[in-house]
Length: 174
Image (cartoon, rainbow, N blue to C red):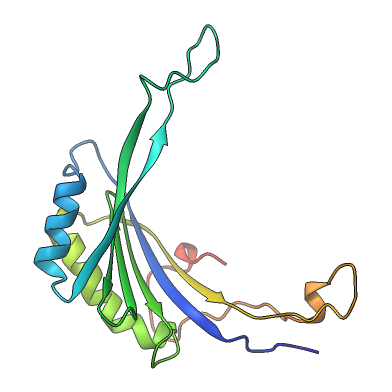
C-alpha cells in the first residue's frame, strides 16, 4: 500500500521577524486589540504563554514564587473555523484548515500576504527573518499485525518549491 498524496487537513505559513530591544511591546491587551481592530471576522479563542522557571543556583530547585508565565501569542479563528491567525511578539502565522478548499500554498498565498502586512504595519516591523510553509496530514496506516511499520513503504517525501517568487531560497525549511 502506498499513499502518494495524503489528504492535507491543515496548512500554515509562519513569518518570524528580527526584533530589536526597541520593538514595540507585545502583551495580551495589545494582541487582543490587534485582532479586534484588524481581524474583525475572527474570534479570539485564547491567549497563550510559556513558563519561565526560576531555578535557584545554590539548590538547583525550581522556585515557583519567582517563576512567571510570559505571554506569547493570541489565537483567533473565523466563524467557519477555516482560518486561524496566531500573532506573537515576533511571529505571525496564518493557518488554513480543511473545510471547502484543500489547504495549500496556492490557496492561501494571496490572503496570507495581505494578513501579514496588517501585522507588519501594526507592529512597525520590516525585517522578516524566516518564512516557513507547513502541511499537516492525518491518515491511518494499517499495521496488519506487524510489530512496527517502515514509513518509506508508504511515503515518498520531497520538496516542492512555489512556482512564483516568495522570499529567498535559504528562507525555506523542509
